[in-house]
Length: 448
Image (cartoon, rainbow, N blue to C red; front, side):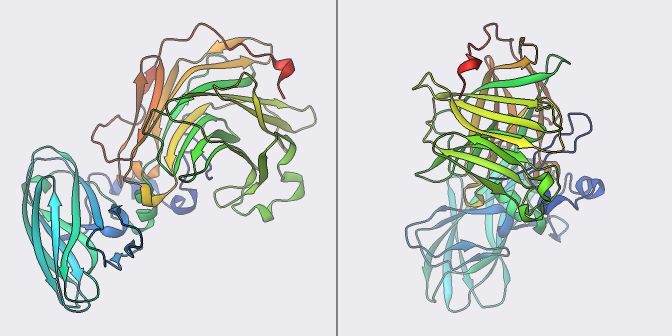
């Protein structure tokens, strides 16, 4: 699991993460230039949506060969496969839809569907050609889903498709889709979003406590629901595959590198101890450091408890320890304890986030709730957390894709991303819940 998540909410720490590898060269001017855009225009009112950054195989039968590459839809052989392309319009009205496609041999007929309306288009010729499909009514502004499905072909496969094009009355406002090739991978993953919590004290904080619930049906493969984030790392749960889920706890090295082999010995994260069945090691690619995870098949609809400790060791280093409690037991599970060198601090910068790390599943939505949150000061006082500020990543800020939001549900905060929903919550929005009154009952002397 990745990422160096930092927030601009806390004491000058930079704007959030995840895309550190792909996005560190995106300047403020670059970001501003993408606001209210669409992609390269075919003419003054026609827009071209690259398949590489905006399309997904939403139906794919076993053994099918279709793939979305960095430039196109390729190997389109199965008539059962559905390829869905998404873009956002701000007006209702008519959209004229087209395709930019090449048929290496023979002739193909392809069905194009928006909502309940389908139209067929005939494609032929090995040269990439702009084909007009026809007009489709758009009754509600927001994300539009364009489905492609093969009907018939005389050659080996239906077509290579690089773009879905659109024009017409519904396109005359602000249109949003990924038009920057450096973002295609991130746009297909979908925008990440975060809650930056207001800590109700200026005293030293030794513990963070959080309760996390993923609603039934919101636990899509590729999801990471990060519960207890702090300045030097993160702790949460993820869906790694159809058969594997993990509780993940990672701490960054103070040495800034994406390759853990480059970390000097005196900057390496040191393992103090780990719980039974926990895998430990190093991670890289988006910052580097110590990683620990416990394979545990947590269940959507259940509430899980996360406890994090961070205190200086008195020798210029800081110890970070993470525990996890599932509803079927009363005993806290030790995930790991890590020692971070070149650091002497208590816990700071409490945050949570949700992300999708599987670009093939980026069209699917996910949601998570966080509630009954507390911090415990170094002198033993529990204080409730009741405020949070919503923030988003660079994919959203660059207007490449904006289906990410936060809010409250009763006394819980929530985060939601993916699925191309149309609700918008402005980044920077402040949320509050009624502060919980019953602090956690934890026997610290018996924690493993």
